[in-house]
Image (cartoon, rainbow, N blue to C red; front, side, top):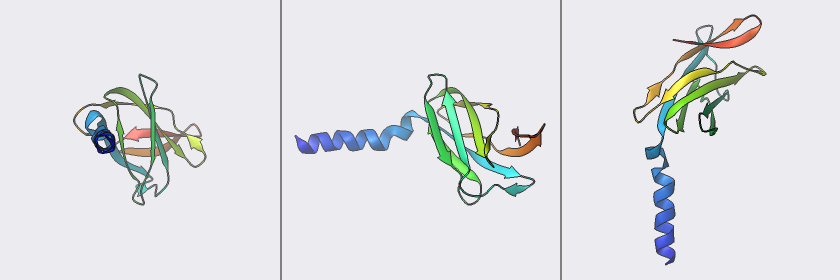
Length: 110
């Protein structure tokens, strides 16, 4: 019985990405990578929230439920306005430049 429960648990843990859509991309400011540790948050229609941080190259990757979502970035002590993204069975790439408009960072898709 213990083996059965363990197998079910492992199946659920390792199959989670199969039920979610992959959103990935790079963040840059002024043509250069934003670097490691910049927080990326995605909130979907069902109020599920997901977050990750960029790697040393400013790249991020996150698995979220399929559907329409809003992405925002926490950078240099402030959060950008949200940017609409769509998650599906196919991976979706969203590369952004962080630019300052009216004193606030905003996301501009490349």
